[in-house]
Amino acid sequence: ARRIQYTCHWRTALIAGSANGFIYGHAGYSVCSGMHQEPSSMRKHLTQRLVAILFIPLIHVSGFLSAQTLSQKEALLADAEYYLSLADYARALPLYLKLDPMEPDNAVIKYKTGLCYLNSPSAKAEAVPYLEFASSYLDNIPAELQPTADVPAETYYNFGIALMIVYRLDEAEAAFGKYKTLLKPDDRKQSDVARHLEMCATAKKMMASPVNVTITGLQS
Image 1 (cartoon, rainbow, N blue to C red):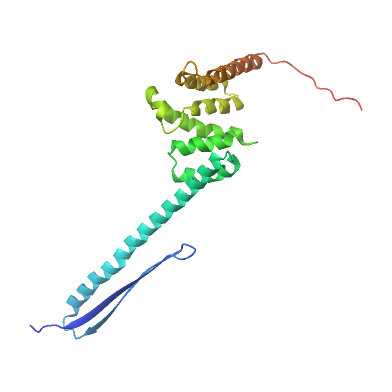
Image 2: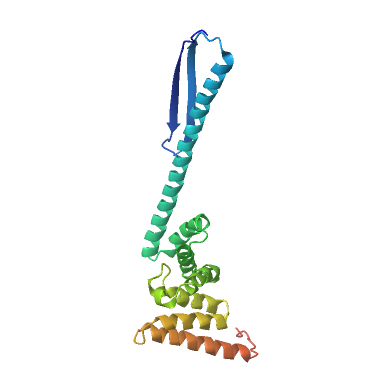
Protein backbone atom coordinates (compact mmCIF):
# COMPACT_ATOMS: atom_id res chain seq x y z
CA ALA A 1 0.00 0.00 0.00
CA ARG A 2 1.24 3.44 -0.82
CA ARG A 3 1.73 5.93 1.99
CA ILE A 4 -0.56 8.90 1.73
CA GLN A 5 0.93 12.25 2.56
CA TYR A 6 -1.02 15.47 2.83
CA THR A 7 -1.12 18.59 4.91
CA CYS A 8 -4.21 20.13 6.40
CA HIS A 9 -4.46 23.39 8.28
CA TRP A 10 -7.55 24.03 10.37
CA ARG A 11 -8.59 27.40 11.56
CA THR A 12 -11.50 28.56 13.62
CA ALA A 13 -12.58 32.09 14.22
CA LEU A 14 -14.83 33.21 17.00
CA ILE A 15 -16.72 36.40 16.50
CA ALA A 16 -18.77 37.00 19.61
CA GLY A 17 -19.97 40.07 21.34
CA SER A 18 -20.23 43.68 20.41
CA ALA A 19 -21.06 46.96 22.06
CA ASN A 20 -24.72 46.04 21.68
CA GLY A 21 -24.31 42.49 22.96
CA PHE A 22 -25.08 40.71 19.71
CA ILE A 23 -23.68 37.28 18.92
CA TYR A 24 -22.48 36.66 15.41
CA GLY A 25 -21.38 33.06 16.05
CA HIS A 26 -18.40 30.95 15.06
CA ALA A 27 -16.87 30.48 11.65
CA GLY A 28 -14.78 27.44 10.85
CA TYR A 29 -12.93 26.71 7.63
CA SER A 30 -10.10 24.50 6.38
CA VAL A 31 -7.36 24.68 3.81
CA CYS A 32 -6.11 21.28 2.67
CA SER A 33 -3.54 20.31 0.10
CA GLY A 34 -1.77 17.18 -0.98
CA MET A 35 -2.18 14.04 -3.01
CA HIS A 36 -4.84 11.56 -1.95
CA GLN A 37 -5.50 8.20 -3.54
CA GLU A 38 -8.11 7.02 -0.98
CA PRO A 39 -11.01 9.53 -1.23
CA SER A 40 -13.44 7.65 1.07
CA SER A 41 -10.92 7.60 3.93
CA MET A 42 -10.09 11.24 3.35
CA ARG A 43 -13.77 12.22 3.35
CA LYS A 44 -14.36 10.35 6.61
CA HIS A 45 -11.42 12.09 8.26
CA LEU A 46 -12.48 15.52 7.03
CA THR A 47 -16.09 14.91 8.12
CA GLN A 48 -15.00 14.08 11.66
CA ARG A 49 -12.85 17.20 11.85
CA LEU A 50 -15.62 19.36 10.38
CA VAL A 51 -18.17 18.07 12.88
CA ALA A 52 -15.78 18.87 15.71
CA ILE A 53 -15.24 22.41 14.41
CA LEU A 54 -18.95 23.11 13.94
CA PHE A 55 -20.17 21.46 17.16
CA ILE A 56 -17.71 22.81 19.73
CA PRO A 57 -18.39 26.48 18.90
CA LEU A 58 -22.11 25.83 19.44
CA ILE A 59 -21.32 24.85 23.02
CA HIS A 60 -19.47 28.12 23.52
CA VAL A 61 -22.32 30.13 22.01
CA SER A 62 -24.86 28.34 24.23
CA GLY A 63 -22.77 29.07 27.31
CA PHE A 64 -22.36 32.70 26.28
CA LEU A 65 -26.10 33.15 25.80
CA SER A 66 -26.82 31.56 29.18
CA ALA A 67 -24.35 33.89 30.86
CA GLN A 68 -25.84 36.84 29.02
CA THR A 69 -29.37 35.88 30.13
CA LEU A 70 -28.17 35.47 33.70
CA SER A 71 -26.51 38.87 33.68
CA GLN A 72 -29.69 40.50 32.33
CA LYS A 73 -31.71 38.88 35.11
CA GLU A 74 -29.22 39.98 37.74
CA ALA A 75 -29.30 43.55 36.41
CA LEU A 76 -33.10 43.62 36.48
CA LEU A 77 -33.15 42.24 40.02
CA ALA A 78 -30.55 44.73 41.24
CA ASP A 79 -32.52 47.67 39.83
CA ALA A 80 -35.83 46.35 41.20
CA GLU A 81 -34.37 45.83 44.68
CA TYR A 82 -32.84 49.30 44.61
CA TYR A 83 -36.11 51.04 43.79
CA LEU A 84 -37.99 48.91 46.31
CA SER A 85 -35.50 49.89 49.03
CA LEU A 86 -36.41 53.52 48.27
CA ALA A 87 -40.13 52.69 48.40
CA ASP A 88 -40.27 53.76 44.75
CA TYR A 89 -42.93 51.19 43.90
CA ALA A 90 -43.81 52.76 40.56
CA ARG A 91 -40.32 52.12 39.17
CA ALA A 92 -39.82 48.78 40.90
CA LEU A 93 -43.08 47.23 39.66
CA PRO A 94 -42.30 46.98 35.90
CA LEU A 95 -38.94 45.41 36.71
CA TYR A 96 -40.50 42.73 38.92
CA LEU A 97 -43.10 42.11 36.23
CA LYS A 98 -40.24 41.36 33.82
CA LEU A 99 -38.58 39.07 36.36
CA ASP A 100 -41.74 37.14 37.20
CA PRO A 101 -42.00 35.11 33.95
CA MET A 102 -38.27 34.37 34.18
CA GLU A 103 -38.86 32.65 37.53
CA PRO A 104 -42.58 31.87 37.71
CA ASP A 105 -42.20 29.76 40.87
CA ASN A 106 -40.19 32.33 42.82
CA ALA A 107 -42.35 33.29 45.82
CA VAL A 108 -40.07 36.18 46.77
CA ILE A 109 -40.54 37.87 43.40
CA LYS A 110 -44.28 37.19 43.63
CA TYR A 111 -44.40 38.82 47.07
CA LYS A 112 -42.49 41.93 46.01
CA THR A 113 -44.58 42.29 42.85
CA GLY A 114 -47.72 42.13 44.99
CA LEU A 115 -46.26 44.64 47.44
CA CYS A 116 -45.65 47.09 44.60
CA TYR A 117 -49.20 46.68 43.33
CA LEU A 118 -50.58 47.13 46.86
CA ASN A 119 -48.77 50.47 47.11
CA SER A 120 -49.88 51.67 43.69
CA PRO A 121 -52.49 54.43 43.49
CA SER A 122 -55.00 52.63 41.28
CA ALA A 123 -54.07 48.96 40.82
CA LYS A 124 -54.15 47.65 44.40
CA ALA A 125 -56.49 44.77 43.53
CA GLU A 126 -53.83 43.39 41.15
CA ALA A 127 -51.79 42.48 44.23
CA VAL A 128 -54.13 39.62 45.21
CA PRO A 129 -52.85 36.77 42.96
CA TYR A 130 -49.21 37.58 43.68
CA LEU A 131 -49.64 37.77 47.45
CA GLU A 132 -51.84 34.69 47.35
CA PHE A 133 -49.02 32.73 45.72
CA ALA A 134 -46.52 33.95 48.33
CA SER A 135 -48.93 33.16 51.16
CA SER A 136 -49.43 29.64 49.87
CA TYR A 137 -45.66 29.25 49.84
CA LEU A 138 -45.55 30.24 53.51
CA ASP A 139 -48.38 27.83 54.32
CA ASN A 140 -46.13 24.94 53.28
CA ILE A 141 -43.39 25.95 55.71
CA PRO A 142 -43.58 24.79 59.35
CA ALA A 143 -44.76 27.60 61.64
CA GLU A 144 -41.53 27.59 63.65
CA LEU A 145 -39.52 28.21 60.47
CA GLN A 146 -41.76 30.85 58.91
CA PRO A 147 -40.08 33.82 60.67
CA THR A 148 -36.82 32.93 58.90
CA ALA A 149 -38.33 32.02 55.51
CA ASP A 150 -37.33 33.76 52.28
CA VAL A 151 -40.82 35.24 52.11
CA PRO A 152 -41.46 37.52 55.12
CA ALA A 153 -44.24 36.86 57.60
CA GLU A 154 -45.71 40.25 56.63
CA THR A 155 -46.94 38.51 53.50
CA TYR A 156 -50.00 37.39 55.45
CA TYR A 157 -50.67 40.94 56.67
CA ASN A 158 -50.36 42.49 53.20
CA PHE A 159 -52.41 39.68 51.70
CA GLY A 160 -55.14 40.43 54.24
CA ILE A 161 -55.19 44.10 53.22
CA ALA A 162 -55.38 43.15 49.52
CA LEU A 163 -58.27 40.80 50.26
CA MET A 164 -60.13 43.57 52.10
CA ILE A 165 -59.87 45.75 49.00
CA VAL A 166 -61.68 43.12 46.91
CA TYR A 167 -64.20 42.37 49.71
CA ARG A 168 -62.98 38.84 50.39
CA LEU A 169 -63.40 39.53 54.08
CA ASP A 170 -63.49 35.98 55.47
CA GLU A 171 -60.20 35.21 53.74
CA ALA A 172 -58.77 38.52 54.93
CA GLU A 173 -59.60 37.60 58.53
CA ALA A 174 -57.87 34.25 58.05
CA ALA A 175 -54.75 35.96 56.65
CA PHE A 176 -54.62 38.42 59.56
CA GLY A 177 -55.11 35.52 61.97
CA LYS A 178 -52.10 33.70 60.55
CA TYR A 179 -49.97 36.79 60.87
CA LYS A 180 -51.14 37.37 64.43
CA THR A 181 -49.98 33.89 65.51
CA LEU A 182 -46.46 34.68 64.26
CA LEU A 183 -46.18 37.83 66.37
CA LYS A 184 -45.01 37.93 69.94
CA PRO A 185 -47.74 38.87 72.45
CA ASP A 186 -46.11 42.22 73.21
CA ASP A 187 -45.40 43.11 69.57
CA ARG A 188 -46.80 46.55 68.73
CA LYS A 189 -48.14 45.12 65.46
CA GLN A 190 -50.66 43.11 67.44
CA SER A 191 -52.82 46.21 67.88
CA ASP A 192 -52.66 46.95 64.16
CA VAL A 193 -53.76 43.42 63.32
CA ALA A 194 -56.60 43.66 65.88
CA ARG A 195 -57.75 46.91 64.26
CA HIS A 196 -57.91 45.30 60.81
CA LEU A 197 -59.79 42.31 62.19
CA GLU A 198 -62.31 44.72 63.71
CA MET A 199 -62.63 46.52 60.39
CA CYS A 200 -63.37 43.21 58.65
CA ALA A 201 -66.03 42.35 61.23
CA THR A 202 -67.67 45.77 60.89
CA ALA A 203 -67.63 45.59 57.09
CA LYS A 204 -69.28 42.15 57.15
CA LYS A 205 -72.08 43.44 59.39
CA MET A 206 -72.69 46.43 57.17
CA MET A 207 -72.72 44.30 54.04
CA ALA A 208 -75.18 41.90 55.69
CA SER A 209 -77.59 44.78 56.41
CA PRO A 210 -77.41 47.19 53.50
CA VAL A 211 -79.12 50.54 53.82
CA ASN A 212 -80.86 52.24 50.94
CA VAL A 213 -79.47 55.73 50.42
CA THR A 214 -80.83 58.43 48.17
CA ILE A 215 -78.43 61.16 47.10
CA THR A 216 -79.95 64.46 46.09
CA GLY A 217 -77.95 67.19 44.43
CA LEU A 218 -77.80 70.63 46.02
CA GLN A 219 -79.92 73.31 44.39
CA SER A 220 -77.91 76.15 42.96
